[in-house]
Length: 187
Image (cartoon, rainbow, N blue to C red; front, side):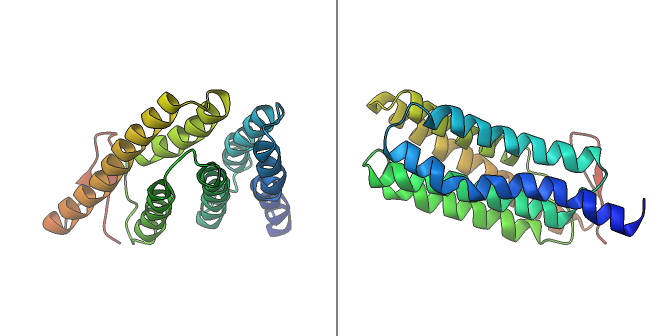
């Protein structure tokens, strides 16, 4: 594939990610108005999260920068939604702080020279999307309590798995074999 063609194709998944960021103000407006359209629109934006990764792999243009852009779009959508929920008194401020901490942890550990295997992390983002949908569908105390407890559990598990990875890596200074059968080597 030529460099020009590759650049053209690389723009496709990035554009899909950008839609998530560009559509955030409309989503927040719909959510703040308790519009019936907020849930279907949110689900559409969730679909763009699936589509951008699929397109990047399918077109052969997956790269670290695209992954960071995708995660930044996810962070914007999640943080914006929970900030609105906080503003409406549905969740406490510590939820926003934990989201910020979790994203910062992801970014910082992603900069490590060895790929970090966090078996919980990929499910954490999915949980947050589900938590937003559940809050839109069932804005009642029980939903908020379940989300808060599960949120703490996911954040703690993700943080712990990254700490354990670093501890094993730095203790061994040799290849680390993960349960998924991949070997990670120091560069």
